Length: 189
Image (cartoon, rainbow, N blue to C red; front, top):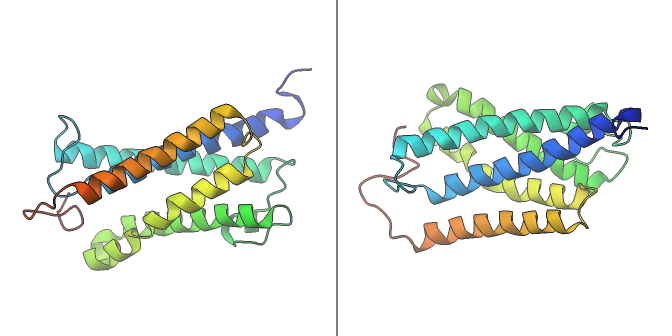
């Protein structure tokens, strides 16, 4: 019997896409926190840093979509489509699935407002974009609490690395003197 028999392939896809989503969201969050004003990462110009942030955001949405779709398809996961969007309605592990639903809902709000950014105005877009700061910790708790590998060393190390990266980005942003010439929130990309 192969590991891909009896629906195992979907289960592995769900797990793998969840881990990749966490890594991508961590990268997106760290870039969003760390970059501001004219701050450059390494030798990258500001426009390249913003492009990397946007590209990683888009890629994370793709992997979140794969993760959600495979969770709904997988009979072992027992996730109904309504539970993906309506928090705490799952019959199994309601709290952790609910946190995943909150992360999905916040991500959808970011996608929609990002697409409508020019129509809703920068102030409204910025206010809604701040919900991204809530998305990562909610998704992180979902990932480390829901995953079947949470007791494994590799996932614990990965989780610690993700928290360390976000913590480092926050420290960098807090400790870096503000740039009075421009701001990441007000500068036009």
